[in-house]
Length: 280
Image 1: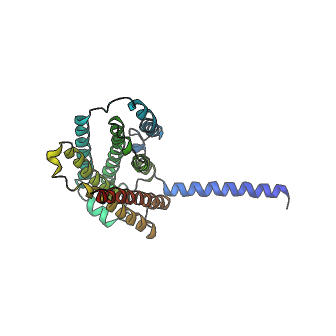
Image 2: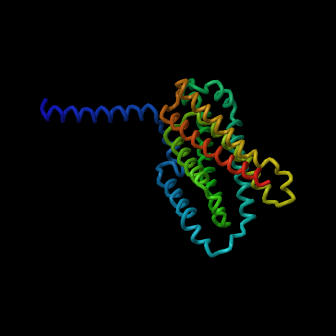
Image 3: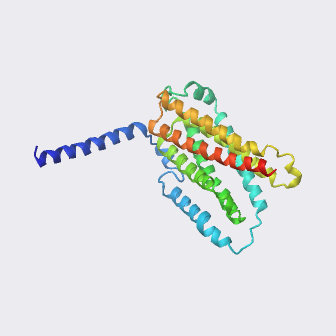
């Protein structure tokens, strides 16, 4: 066999590979001109720029700025922030169920959608809009870390904390930009519900010692997040196993991603609460 034949075979292999990847992406990905016209959604650069500034500040610039300073007194700013986050996440969850028929549609078509986008246009419109709001809520979550830095709580800026916030922003943006499947709604509802409870706790705890006796449920917040990841892992696995109408590459990513979150949160819970029991 001549070198020319080897060269032709190699080129054909590259072309076949490119065509295979293109066909896979065409099958797996979904685009929408309306969604792509929304703020932050046309390109990834605004989102990536925000995350770059965030990482630079919380890991380097912020600690250097606060090194010789007293912690900022931002109690009331944080209370307003936590209240806004609580209300915003509750809005995301409640607005989904305000649309007639959406709950039954999601339950009946959990694995395979029935009909087309025109027939269920009102459902998909609400879903896309609330997914965008969900993405914005993940950008707002970044202020959690900024407040840690400004209050000189740098020990709270752990790998789990930073990875969790950055990962959620990228994952939700990617899902809304390229996937747009209704199977993502249950995970979004569960996560927004957990966050509304979590931020309500942060808001109440800011009232001081008088409120602390009513906040005995603090440790259950982490348990709730762990339960969330267990449910998410089971859900993502079922989408993959039952070959649902859902991008298999993304479902595989979901399984790996949620598994990592579950491991990190279990490790955090064990370290935090077992240490507290020993100290007591």
